[in-house]
Image (cartoon, rainbow, N blue to C red):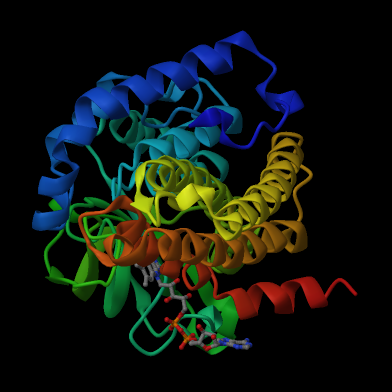
Length: 387
Ligand SMILES: Cc1cc2nc3c(=O)[nH]c(=O)nc-3n(C[C@H](O)[C@H](O)[C@H](O)COP(=O)(O)OP(=O)(O)OC[C@H]3O[C@@H](n4cnc5c(N)ncnc54)[C@H](O)[C@@H]3O)c2cc1C
């Protein structure tokens, strides 16, 4: 799988520890997860025991410091987890969101006390994380969120509803985007941690039925006078939420680019294997020049994507990945992912349209990559602002 593109290893991969870690992660996914993927797709979520197993194997909070219970790695470790998860087709296990998107908010903006309280339990899998930004009335226009958190003594009282929240059925730690001062627009937004096992008034809606990513639980969440201590505010003061989100969204967006490259590699590998054995007109599908040209184009574009994604990973490790470049990774790679998977599906013929074939699943799974984490149009807006 890894060799399908023959891209020379990027500088950040040139470390024996990273390649040993990558192999171990791949073996974990193969051994512990792959046999259950079909069951997870049917039930619509990954059970909590699997999170605990991943925690024991050192896959959760891989880039969080050891003093807070993490594995003490860095973004390289997250990048290889993302890659291996895509290569092995471990659909829907929301580790990346937990590790590379939510834990960094707590590590970057949490107080010492907050980090000690939540990170070790996120690393063990006792806590499963979600981030609740989107609401029924607003997604792209994040500043327009309506959920409020009003101070009442030493508590916040949270009211509002969220939708499309990944890990929404299983998460018990939710980074909630709420307005602590609705009169201030974006400057009135704060991030507040809700530990769902500790509160009253929190309800989960149904597990939403999606066209793809069937094993991932995605839900509506309702906050009805949910009281949390004021010490659950992330950061030293109210009103920092929007800036905190803008600081961390480039990493989230590049994560989507990395997921795209990993899935593209799997799609091409699956397609090469399929067309070389499928017989038609006295030969194989591979024998047609059209098939070879199509796959040559896919391989070329995928190589360009991987080199760019590796470049973005290097920038991120050096703390130099800006919002516009991360937006390029997210929008361009996710568009390419959908295009390449569509070509690969075509070469599978009718079998490609069957849900039991990996390429059909990838076709449906890929589509949301152009929407979540900020729609691709919003990415272009961010890029255009730099010109
Ligand atoms: C499977 C899944 C998982 C998700 N997980 C999470 C999660 O964990 N947490 C969370 O908070 N959210 C999550 N989301 C929500 C996701 O981030 C939003 O769907 C996304 O930001 C778009 O918001 P919206 O759906 O409200 O679309 P809208 O904001 O209504 O936009 C609709 C469309 O309008 C166009 N558009 C919007 N703005 C512009 C613009 N400025 N310029 C040009 N065109 C524009 C785009 O084509 C866009 O797709 C998830 C969504 C899905 C489907």
